[in-house]
Length: 259
Length: 259
DNA sequence: CGGCAAATTGACTCCACTCAAAGGAGGTGG
DNA sequence: CCACCTCCTTTGAGTGGAGTCAATTTGCCG
Image (tube, rainbow over all chains, first blue to last red; front, top):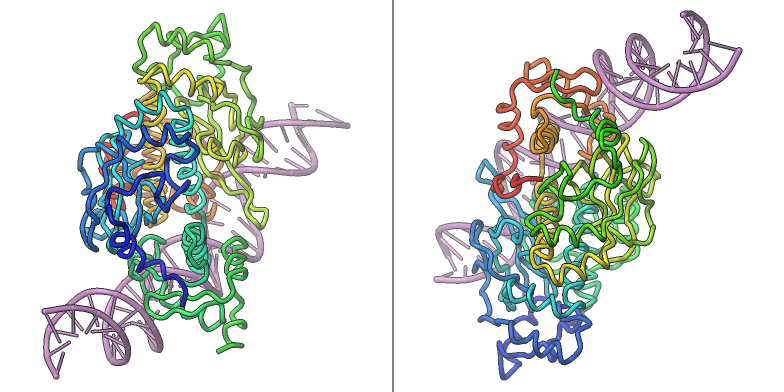
């Protein structure tokens, strides 16, 4: 059984003698994080504005909706979800944040966090004072452009997710997204743990919890993957990728054949 | 009959003796545009990187998908839509760009324009070399933060649109969005022209063209508004706003802060 | 072991899509 | 100026995908 993504957050934390004091230059995130492309000199200056807090336990909130915005947060290990409550009091998941992800880009313009952000498992983060960050960016063109790149990429990503997609497509896209996020951190791209519940996924993908169950069951019946509670094992990554790209729903025959 | 938004693009163009050479300080967009909050000195320096091209006619493309990214574009007058083709060759509308809007924020990270952008009516724009813009931003904190604010706001906006909304809610949100965009430019907030076709709206809101027709007909039957081809007259702005709020709980105030 | 939340499964319902056809509106050319 | 054509829009009828409601089942944790 390979590296399962979920467990390494805690390992990470206790493995390093210095705990929160892991230098950016030593960080396993490497160039997934903001200092990407900076000279080692600049990385050192960058580190001076990094504040590494204690890990958050599952269920602990990083931000609450309405909190004043001071710093953006880079996820080192673990997983977060951001969410709001709609007018009916229903929780609405806006996104998941995995290591390398940056939280708080949506809070800059109003200086208020527009959403709640909660840890879904034990998670470590780095806080970056936004004021320091921007003033530093003025003297580090690479940092400034990395910030722009990040925000731009997020805008592009959201344009895709917004698309008019079937339940099958949404699930496929979501699984591929997870797979790629794990693989670019050196984990298996076909076996991983979901940190979030089915209803988190459902809310994020704007569908009913039951539909998530049913689609996963259908994918499993078709031999694309196996789900055992939180553990997902993908057998046919390429077919899944095709599904996510292609937008063509699986033929019902395909399910029956294997079932 | 009040100021109808659609007609003033052409009027604007021929009204000014200098045509493309309208200075930022004289521009009717005022603080809807990027130089918002800059000192008059800085505005003058800002103007030096502004390139004002001839107006585009309806149907002319500003960018094509895959074009290399050089500059972002501020819409002065008119209306644009950005769109891509999905795997089945279907056009997928990603957004509409009205005066004060900025086009190209999604192209920064890949240095390629991810979408086509076409004028829906005669439209005037200002091109801003992104390289010049960012290097200038390093010496103008207000400009830098305005850039960050813009991108942040866009991310927040998209989180809302992504929501799990009924056809009625989507249409209501769309109409309110238009209304607010027009009113903050000094136009009527209850009577305006749609620059886009029903199927553009449908594609943008991820629904069938027929559904747009039906919902508008239903709103009209309910006395909320009147539609006559492209002209929309809203009678019950508040009820419409209520409808649009029904799905979303994000603090609207944060986002409405002038689009 | 019991209590509880998460997940699954089935039955039924409904909103929005598809298919189809009939009006307009506007543009073009004779 | 009218006839014609094309694209946009509207309206109707029928269908289906995903939601809702409800009943279990499963796993987790004290």
